[in-house]
Every structure is written in structure tokens, then in C-alpha cells.
Length: 277
Ligand code: ATR
Image (tube, rainbow, N blue to C red; front, side, top):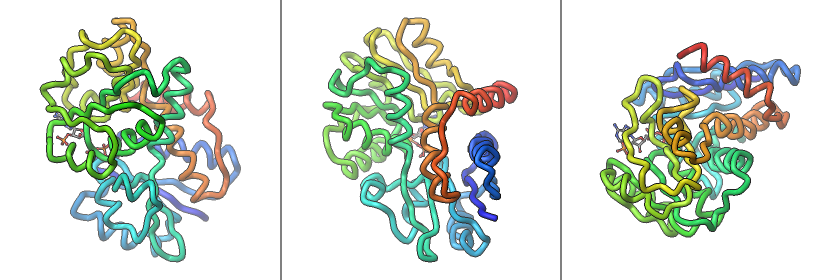
């Protein structure tokens, strides 16, 4: 029986077990996918015992993505640039780290906003954590001319910019309102607005009405940010599609079948999120 899991702290909000459980059933695979609450101080010990405990690998969520990069034995080139891991698998008896957040982010943006193009203008990114690293890398690789990075902790933004390279303009967190002027896409990668977290305060007056607003928070699905953007007439992109698309490569690595993201799967997760609110 193949086993995988998702680790985070806290982990209660994670829908990854539902997603992978749905695919295990659909493809008739004998396997399990669990969730484990792992405190930061327990992370190294958990990872060191992962293979011996019979796991093929794991997903990694807040706040462990960067710490797991430091802990794995090796990683691919793109992941070494990000220094953040969201997917771990066992290879030759050791842990290998990769990152599927960027491909999940872009796949869902293109599917939701076919009119958006990378050359439209600078992109405003809120946050500089693990998810922001993957998203900034994917956006620059897709051809965006500049990223304006707004983060509370400046040191973290500067580290992100120097690791990823390219046109990343580090701005102060308090500049996030006026700094939207002239941007062609706004992305929230912070945990603000997530159920149980503080709200995200941002003034959208300077944002072009054509700029999509993409919130990677998916619990709730329609965050206050997305509601306000929609009321202003901006296209909105929720965080669920990214979550579904980033899961594809991990499932394939652990269970050997490339799964499909379907409307049925999305509806299953939407109803679970709505039931929890
Ligand atoms: P992930 O790996 O999912 O990106 P993370 O690494 O914990 O998660 O990053 C969370 C992001 O939310 C960070 O950018 C964090 O800002 P700091 O770098 O200053 O910590 C941001 N964030 C969390 N709480 C915040 C708050 N109250 N105000 C502003 N930003 C916040």
C-alpha cells in the first residue's frame, strides 16, 4: 500500500487529503493520503523518519516550505532557485524536493483569464513566503516585465529578489495601496484573509479595472479581497484551481498515475469548504 501525506502547522484547513483521496478512488489505487500537524521544532525529525515510516513522499504547506528545502537531500534546478519545496518524494532512499506551486498557479490563471497576458504590465505580489517565491519565479519565466513585491518584512523580500533574480522591485508593505497604479495583475500570497487569520486591508482604488485579482487563499473561496475586486468589476481568480493543479505532479510521483483536474473534483472541494465556514 503506497502512502503519502501533507504536513503543515496548522494543518486543519488542508484539503489535500480530499483531493488525493478522490483520485485514489477514481483510479482504483490501493493507497492512503493523510495529514499531519508538524510543529516547526518537530520538522527535521518527522522528515528523517518519513521513508522508514513507509511514505512515498509528502506535500508541504505553511510554514514549512523553506525549511523543507533546507532539509531534503537534493532538489531540481528550479526548486533550488526558489529555495522552497511543496512536494517531497523518495528517490534512491533519500528525500528529493520539488515545487509544483508555480505550474499550478499559472495553469489556473490561464484557464480563468484567457485574456491576461504576461506582457500587460508589472504584477503586484503581496507576500514573500514560500508560495510567493514559486509564483514570482513562474511569472518572470512567463515574461512579466516587473514584479512589485509588497511584504511586511523587508529582509524577506530582499532575499527572495536576490534568490530568484530578474526584475523584482521590493516595496514597503505600506506602499501596497498606491503601488497598484499601472499594474496588470494583483496576487495575494499572504495568509491574510484566510479563515482564522487577520483580514487583508488594501485599497484597490488605484488598480486598473482590467487587472485580474488572484487570491491564493481558498478558505473561504471568495475572500473579502475577491469580493471587493469583483464589486469593482475586476476579473477574479480564486485559490482553489492552483491547489488542484499543484497536486497533479505529486500524485503522479507517489502513486504512478497522472490525474485529471475535473469539475467534479472542484465541486467536491467547494462543498467541503462551504460546509466548514
Ligand atoms: P507560504 O509558504 O504559504 O507563502 P509563509 O512562508 O508563512 O507561507 O508566508 C506567509 C506570508 O504572509 C508572508 O509574506 C508574511 O509576511 P512576513 O514575511 O512579514 O512574515 C505574510 N503575512 C502573514 N501575516 C501577516 C500580517 N499580519 N501582515 C502582513 N503580512 C503577513
